[in-house]
Image (cartoon, rainbow, N blue to C red; front, side):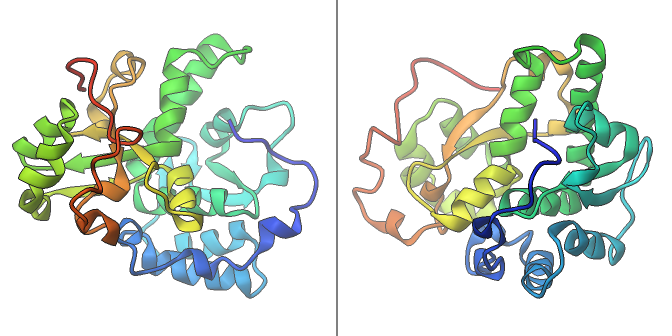
Length: 260
Protein backbone atom coordinates (compact mmCIF):
# COMPACT_ATOMS: atom_id res chain seq x y z
CA UNK A 1 0.00 0.00 0.00
CA UNK A 2 1.25 3.47 -0.78
CA UNK A 3 1.33 6.22 1.76
CA UNK A 4 -0.73 9.29 1.11
CA UNK A 5 -0.55 12.86 2.34
CA UNK A 6 2.47 13.86 4.33
CA UNK A 7 5.13 16.45 3.73
CA UNK A 8 6.03 18.07 0.44
CA UNK A 9 8.32 16.01 -1.82
CA UNK A 10 12.04 16.29 -1.22
CA UNK A 11 14.46 17.74 -3.75
CA UNK A 12 15.48 14.21 -4.70
CA UNK A 13 11.88 13.45 -5.65
CA UNK A 14 11.73 16.34 -8.10
CA UNK A 15 14.86 15.69 -10.13
CA UNK A 16 14.40 15.90 -13.94
CA UNK A 17 12.11 13.13 -15.15
CA UNK A 18 12.87 13.24 -18.86
CA UNK A 19 16.17 11.45 -18.33
CA UNK A 20 14.28 8.44 -17.00
CA UNK A 21 12.50 7.95 -20.33
CA UNK A 22 15.24 6.52 -22.53
CA UNK A 23 13.41 5.50 -25.69
CA UNK A 24 16.24 3.16 -26.70
CA UNK A 25 15.35 0.82 -23.81
CA UNK A 26 13.07 -1.98 -25.06
CA UNK A 27 11.19 -2.27 -21.77
CA UNK A 28 10.03 1.33 -22.13
CA UNK A 29 8.68 0.91 -25.67
CA UNK A 30 5.00 0.73 -24.63
CA UNK A 31 5.37 3.80 -22.43
CA UNK A 32 7.85 5.96 -24.30
CA UNK A 33 5.60 8.40 -26.17
CA UNK A 34 3.30 9.32 -23.30
CA UNK A 35 6.13 8.97 -20.82
CA UNK A 36 8.30 11.46 -22.66
CA UNK A 37 5.50 14.03 -22.92
CA UNK A 38 4.50 13.62 -19.29
CA UNK A 39 8.11 13.79 -18.12
CA UNK A 40 8.66 17.00 -20.06
CA UNK A 41 5.53 18.48 -18.47
CA UNK A 42 6.78 17.59 -14.98
CA UNK A 43 10.19 19.07 -15.70
CA UNK A 44 8.42 22.22 -16.92
CA UNK A 45 6.60 22.62 -13.61
CA UNK A 46 3.52 20.39 -13.64
CA UNK A 47 2.93 17.95 -10.83
CA UNK A 48 3.10 14.27 -11.73
CA UNK A 49 -0.68 14.03 -11.21
CA UNK A 50 -1.30 16.98 -13.54
CA UNK A 51 0.99 15.58 -16.25
CA UNK A 52 -0.65 12.15 -16.10
CA UNK A 53 -4.12 13.66 -16.06
CA UNK A 54 -3.31 15.59 -19.23
CA UNK A 55 -2.19 12.38 -20.93
CA UNK A 56 -5.36 10.68 -19.74
CA UNK A 57 -7.51 13.45 -21.21
CA UNK A 58 -5.76 13.08 -24.58
CA UNK A 59 -6.56 9.38 -24.94
CA UNK A 60 -9.43 6.95 -24.64
CA UNK A 61 -11.45 7.38 -21.43
CA UNK A 62 -10.70 4.91 -18.65
CA UNK A 63 -13.46 4.05 -16.23
CA UNK A 64 -13.68 2.17 -12.96
CA UNK A 65 -16.93 0.96 -11.47
CA UNK A 66 -17.11 4.16 -9.45
CA UNK A 67 -16.55 6.53 -12.37
CA UNK A 68 -13.97 7.97 -14.78
CA UNK A 69 -10.35 7.50 -13.75
CA UNK A 70 -8.46 10.57 -12.54
CA UNK A 71 -4.99 11.25 -11.16
CA UNK A 72 -4.98 13.44 -8.07
CA UNK A 73 -2.46 14.68 -5.54
CA UNK A 74 -1.47 12.24 -2.81
CA UNK A 75 -2.76 14.91 -0.42
CA UNK A 76 -6.29 13.94 -1.49
CA UNK A 77 -5.97 10.49 0.08
CA UNK A 78 -7.67 10.55 3.51
CA UNK A 79 -5.29 9.47 6.26
CA UNK A 80 -7.82 6.93 7.50
CA UNK A 81 -8.60 5.29 4.14
CA UNK A 82 -6.46 2.58 2.49
CA UNK A 83 -4.96 3.56 -0.85
CA UNK A 84 -6.59 0.74 -2.84
CA UNK A 85 -9.99 1.26 -1.21
CA UNK A 86 -9.86 4.97 -2.00
CA UNK A 87 -9.17 4.27 -5.69
CA UNK A 88 -12.03 1.79 -5.89
CA UNK A 89 -14.45 4.18 -4.17
CA UNK A 90 -13.49 7.41 -5.93
CA UNK A 91 -11.81 6.31 -9.22
CA UNK A 92 -8.99 8.67 -8.23
CA UNK A 93 -5.35 7.57 -8.07
CA UNK A 94 -3.38 9.48 -5.39
CA UNK A 95 -0.07 10.42 -6.97
CA UNK A 96 3.13 11.71 -5.41
CA UNK A 97 5.78 13.74 -7.23
CA UNK A 98 8.22 10.91 -7.73
CA UNK A 99 9.21 8.43 -10.43
CA UNK A 100 7.58 5.53 -8.63
CA UNK A 101 4.13 7.05 -8.93
CA UNK A 102 4.95 8.43 -12.38
CA UNK A 103 5.48 4.91 -13.70
CA UNK A 104 2.44 3.68 -11.82
CA UNK A 105 0.39 6.25 -13.73
CA UNK A 106 1.89 5.24 -17.06
CA UNK A 107 0.91 1.63 -16.43
CA UNK A 108 -2.63 2.78 -15.61
CA UNK A 109 -2.71 4.57 -18.97
CA UNK A 110 -1.43 1.60 -20.95
CA UNK A 111 -2.84 -1.37 -19.02
CA UNK A 112 -6.12 -0.03 -17.61
CA UNK A 113 -7.97 -3.36 -17.58
CA UNK A 114 -5.16 -5.06 -15.67
CA UNK A 115 -4.76 -2.22 -13.18
CA UNK A 116 -8.53 -2.07 -12.68
CA UNK A 117 -8.63 -5.83 -11.99
CA UNK A 118 -5.78 -5.64 -9.48
CA UNK A 119 -7.45 -2.74 -7.71
CA UNK A 120 -10.83 -4.46 -7.58
CA UNK A 121 -9.30 -7.56 -6.02
CA UNK A 122 -7.34 -5.49 -3.50
CA UNK A 123 -10.39 -3.42 -2.54
CA UNK A 124 -12.61 -6.49 -2.20
CA UNK A 125 -10.09 -8.15 0.10
CA UNK A 126 -9.81 -4.99 2.21
CA UNK A 127 -13.59 -4.84 2.46
CA UNK A 128 -13.67 -8.49 3.50
CA UNK A 129 -10.85 -8.54 6.03
CA UNK A 130 -9.96 -4.93 6.76
CA UNK A 131 -6.38 -3.74 7.25
CA UNK A 132 -4.27 -5.83 9.58
CA UNK A 133 -0.58 -6.10 10.43
CA UNK A 134 -0.13 -8.29 7.34
CA UNK A 135 -1.70 -8.04 3.90
CA UNK A 136 -2.59 -11.71 3.65
CA UNK A 137 -1.73 -14.09 0.81
CA UNK A 138 -3.95 -12.54 -1.86
CA UNK A 139 -3.08 -8.90 -1.26
CA UNK A 140 0.60 -9.77 -0.87
CA UNK A 141 0.61 -11.50 -4.28
CA UNK A 142 -1.31 -8.67 -5.95
CA UNK A 143 1.09 -6.08 -4.52
CA UNK A 144 4.13 -8.07 -5.61
CA UNK A 145 2.81 -8.28 -9.16
CA UNK A 146 1.72 -4.64 -9.23
CA UNK A 147 5.23 -3.57 -8.23
CA UNK A 148 7.34 -6.07 -10.19
CA UNK A 149 5.08 -7.91 -12.61
CA UNK A 150 5.35 -8.69 -16.31
CA UNK A 151 3.19 -10.34 -18.95
CA UNK A 152 4.67 -12.83 -21.40
CA UNK A 153 3.20 -14.13 -24.63
CA UNK A 154 5.79 -16.49 -26.10
CA UNK A 155 6.23 -19.63 -28.21
CA UNK A 156 5.81 -22.84 -26.23
CA UNK A 157 9.54 -23.72 -26.06
CA UNK A 158 10.32 -20.33 -24.54
CA UNK A 159 7.48 -20.57 -22.03
CA UNK A 160 8.42 -24.10 -21.02
CA UNK A 161 12.09 -23.22 -20.56
CA UNK A 162 11.09 -20.34 -18.28
CA UNK A 163 8.77 -22.58 -16.26
CA UNK A 164 11.62 -24.98 -15.44
CA UNK A 165 14.26 -22.21 -15.27
CA UNK A 166 16.37 -23.79 -17.98
CA UNK A 167 18.30 -20.61 -18.65
CA UNK A 168 20.52 -22.10 -21.33
CA UNK A 169 17.51 -23.25 -23.33
CA UNK A 170 15.58 -20.06 -22.63
CA UNK A 171 18.27 -17.60 -23.65
CA UNK A 172 20.64 -19.57 -25.89
CA UNK A 173 19.01 -22.62 -27.52
CA UNK A 174 15.72 -20.75 -28.08
CA UNK A 175 17.27 -17.33 -28.53
CA UNK A 176 15.87 -16.82 -32.02
CA UNK A 177 12.32 -17.54 -30.78
CA UNK A 178 12.37 -14.40 -28.64
CA UNK A 179 11.68 -12.50 -31.87
CA UNK A 180 8.19 -14.06 -31.70
CA UNK A 181 7.69 -13.30 -28.00
CA UNK A 182 6.17 -10.27 -26.38
CA UNK A 183 7.28 -9.35 -22.88
CA UNK A 184 5.53 -6.36 -21.29
CA UNK A 185 6.69 -5.02 -17.96
CA UNK A 186 3.76 -3.81 -15.86
CA UNK A 187 5.42 -3.47 -12.46
CA UNK A 188 6.00 0.22 -11.81
CA UNK A 189 8.74 -0.35 -9.22
CA UNK A 190 10.61 -2.52 -11.70
CA UNK A 191 10.26 0.12 -14.42
CA UNK A 192 11.55 2.74 -12.01
CA UNK A 193 14.58 0.65 -11.02
CA UNK A 194 15.43 -0.15 -14.62
CA UNK A 195 15.23 3.53 -15.54
CA UNK A 196 17.40 4.70 -12.66
CA UNK A 197 19.97 1.91 -12.36
CA UNK A 198 19.57 -1.11 -14.67
CA UNK A 199 21.46 -4.08 -13.27
CA UNK A 200 21.71 -7.75 -14.02
CA UNK A 201 19.77 -9.01 -11.03
CA UNK A 202 16.55 -7.07 -11.59
CA UNK A 203 13.85 -9.71 -11.87
CA UNK A 204 10.25 -9.59 -13.08
CA UNK A 205 7.48 -11.77 -11.69
CA UNK A 206 5.97 -13.09 -14.90
CA UNK A 207 2.47 -14.30 -15.69
CA UNK A 208 2.15 -16.30 -18.90
CA UNK A 209 -1.24 -16.03 -20.55
CA UNK A 210 -4.26 -13.96 -19.56
CA UNK A 211 -3.70 -12.34 -16.16
CA UNK A 212 -7.26 -10.99 -16.25
CA UNK A 213 -8.59 -14.54 -16.17
CA UNK A 214 -6.83 -15.51 -12.94
CA UNK A 215 -9.19 -16.17 -10.04
CA UNK A 216 -8.40 -14.72 -6.61
CA UNK A 217 -7.43 -18.14 -5.25
CA UNK A 218 -4.91 -18.52 -8.08
CA UNK A 219 -3.42 -15.08 -7.48
CA UNK A 220 -3.01 -16.01 -3.81
CA UNK A 221 -0.61 -18.82 -4.77
CA UNK A 222 1.74 -16.29 -6.42
CA UNK A 223 1.66 -18.00 -9.83
CA UNK A 224 4.71 -16.08 -11.00
CA UNK A 225 7.82 -17.10 -12.90
CA UNK A 226 11.07 -15.25 -12.09
CA UNK A 227 12.73 -13.68 -15.12
CA UNK A 228 15.94 -11.59 -14.91
CA UNK A 229 14.84 -9.09 -17.52
CA UNK A 230 18.28 -7.99 -18.68
CA UNK A 231 18.84 -11.54 -19.86
CA UNK A 232 16.16 -11.12 -22.54
CA UNK A 233 17.80 -11.15 -25.98
CA UNK A 234 17.97 -7.66 -27.42
CA UNK A 235 17.26 -5.99 -24.08
CA UNK A 236 20.86 -5.53 -22.85
CA UNK A 237 24.08 -5.48 -24.88
CA UNK A 238 26.07 -7.38 -22.27
CA UNK A 239 23.95 -10.52 -22.68
CA UNK A 240 25.50 -11.05 -26.10
CA UNK A 241 28.66 -12.22 -24.30
CA UNK A 242 28.92 -16.04 -24.06
CA UNK A 243 29.42 -16.11 -20.29
CA UNK A 244 26.68 -13.66 -19.35
CA UNK A 245 24.31 -16.38 -18.18
CA UNK A 246 26.97 -18.30 -16.22
CA UNK A 247 26.08 -16.43 -13.05
CA UNK A 248 24.30 -18.62 -10.49
CA UNK A 249 23.62 -15.64 -8.23
CA UNK A 250 21.15 -14.37 -10.88
CA UNK A 251 20.30 -17.36 -13.10
CA UNK A 252 19.48 -19.83 -10.36
CA UNK A 253 18.49 -23.41 -10.97
CA UNK A 254 14.95 -24.47 -10.16
CA UNK A 255 14.34 -26.55 -7.02
CA UNK A 256 11.60 -28.31 -8.93
CA UNK A 257 8.89 -27.74 -11.47
CA UNK A 258 7.16 -24.41 -11.08
CA UNK A 259 4.59 -22.65 -13.13
CA UNK A 260 1.32 -20.79 -13.26
